Length: 454
Ligand SMILES: Cc1cc2nc3c(=O)[nH]c(=O)nc-3n(C[C@H](O)[C@H](O)[C@H](O)COP(=O)(O)OP(=O)(O)OC[C@H]3O[C@@H](n4cnc5c(N)ncnc54)[C@H](O)[C@@H]3O)c2cc1C
Image 1 (cartoon, protein in one colour):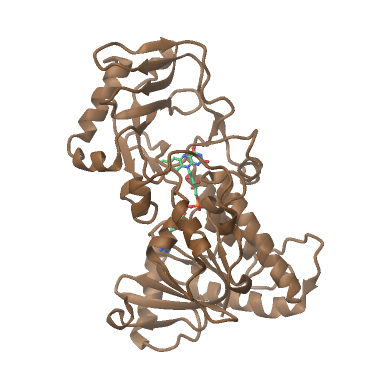
Image 2 (tube, rainbow, N blue to C red):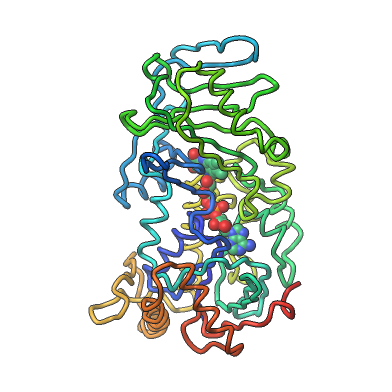
C-alpha cells in the first residue's frame, strides 16, 4: 500500500511530492490533466521560442520567503518587473488615454524570464516518472479507518488506490463540487470549501509579443488601465524579457467569463483593437497568446465562474487546515494556506504544513524518518532530510523497497509520461485483477467503468 497519495500536480502537490520522495516515503502523485503545473502555464512563442506565462507571473521576495528560497535553491534566474516610465489610463473610449507619471505599480515584483513552469519542470525531474499518474480525475475519497481509498476516473476506467495518507492539493471548491467523501466531511468544512474562491480561476490572460518595446522607447512603463464600460482588457503590463530584446505586453481581461464566451469569435480582434487604442497604432502584435482559465474544469468550479470572489484573502479559512479522519486525510493547495493564500507562496506554505503534519504523525507512530539511500540502493535520489530526527531501520526496509520496485519497472517504459501511464493501466486493466506490482499501490484495482461510475 502507498504511504502517501497526493492528488493535484500544481505547485503544492509537486513540491510536497518532491519533499516526501526525498525523505524516502512511498509516495505517488495523481493529476487530472495531462501535464503538471495546474495554474502554472508557460508557453513558447512560435516565432522566437521565447517562453511566456499565461498563469502566474510574479513573486515578491520582500514578503514571500518560501518562493524566494525555492527559486534560489533551483538555481533559476529572476528579473525585476519593468516599471520605469509613465502609465496610461483610458477611462473614456472616445478620448486618448491619460498619461500618469512617476507611479510605480509593481515595486518589488520579480519574474522568471524562462517562465514559471521552470519551478515545476526542475522539481519534477527529481521524481521518477513511475510516481506520476496523469489523466487521473479524483471522484471519491473513502475512509477505511487505517487507510483511505481514492477512486479516480481515467477515461472509461475506474481506478482505486489505497494509501495510508492522502493529501488533496486541489482547490477546495473543486473538491466540494466534484468529489464524494465517505463518510461526508462535517458541514463546517464543506462550508469553508464552498466559501473559498479559487484565486484567479475566473480570469483570462493574454500576451502580445511585439517586434520591439515601442512603449519603452516612448518613456512608458507598459502599465495601463482601461476602466470604461466597454473595456476588453482591464490591466496591461510589460512582459518583455530582461533587456527588452524580446518585447511583449501582457494583460488581464476585463470581461466576465460569460461575456468572453459569447464574444469568443470576435475576441482576438477586440483585444488587438484595444491595444491599439491604448498604445496607439505603433505596431501590430506578432502573435496573440490567450488563456481563459474559467474554461478549465480542473481550475475553475461552477461557483468560481459565478462568484469569483475578487477580493484577495491572504489567510485561508483555518477549517481547511484541520487534518481529517484521524490525520489520514489532508486538504492542501494554495487556497488552504495560513499565509500567501491564493499565491504561489501559499501553495508552498500548504505543502510545508502538510509535510510537517505527516512527519509529526510518523514520529508519533514510531516510524521516524527513513535513512538516506546509500550506494547500492536502486534509487539514488532518495535522500533523507536529516533534521536531527531519529532514523528508522523499519522505514529503510519498507518505503525504499516499494519505491525502488516501482521505479525500476517504470524506467523501462516509454519516454512520454502520459503514454507510460496509459500503457501501465491498460496492461493492468486487461487482467481485471488485483495488481501485484508496479501500480502505485500494491492493492490498486480496476473495474469496468459502467459498473464503477456514479
Ligand atoms: C492567470 C493567473 C495569474 C496568476 N498570477 C499569479 C502571480 O503573479 N503570482 C502568484 O503568486 N500567483 C498567481 N496566481 C495564482 C497561482 O497560480 C496559484 O496560487 C498556484 O499556482 C496554486 O497552486 P496549487 O498547487 O495550490 O493549485 P493548482 O495550480 O490549481 O493545482 C491544482 C491541481 O489539481 C488538479 N486537479 C483539479 N481537480 C482534480 C481532480 N478531481 N483530480 C485530480 N487532480 C485534480 C489540477 O489539474 C491542478 O494540476 C495566478 C493564477 C492565475 C490563473
